[in-house]
Image (tube, rainbow, N blue to C red; front, side):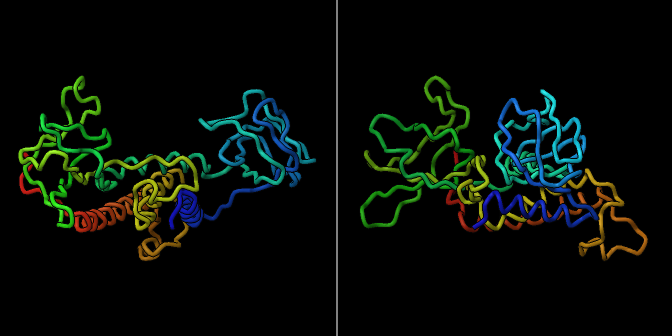
Length: 296
């Protein structure tokens, strides 16, 4: 089961496979409070130098360091580049001058998940949104509905649901009457009291923790490589052409002496993303085919 943590690991592994570099690392030898701390202590003498270090998701600016493994943090040095100052424990890993901070990879992964919609989407089967009433043919839908795939009604117990094919989905109704901003108008009415099943497309749920699974976000595990390549296509642009090793098939296949620059690799990854997204879109449409004959 793919998780946010496993996708981040794939992104990191891929990016570091492209160049002849590695982050220097050390280990905290004393706890670091979430605020007020002015000293960073590590086990590797001389590893920490002036500049940024990363512990967990937090980037910290180090003003100076001595040869005994102690580094000075200025009053403003915590929570750099949009990260949040947090408490860290003895034994935590310290990455010195990280090439690809984990906090940055997380932000780019959030962007990738947002950008993947509407080419791919979360399919929601909702059988509680609408129950037929006697005095209305317009019903509110959840705000998360982006488009309707199908509507069906269980008219007779024990029989197959009946597909409703004459309806109108409106994403801009009167906000006073319908505050969710989504409605379904029916032109063929099942019996009063019938509960409808509405299958709809929605954007993905944002991830909160690295332990979140892709399925909990409304995504398929098959899409892990798409997310990896979307993020890598953006972050690889931070590399110089000379940093990229010919370790990938596309780089090895190029003519001898032709450098495989970061821009070229980014373009290649975007092409792969477009191809994979198109494949998965076709699978989504096959797995959840639209049963609409005419949407008014």
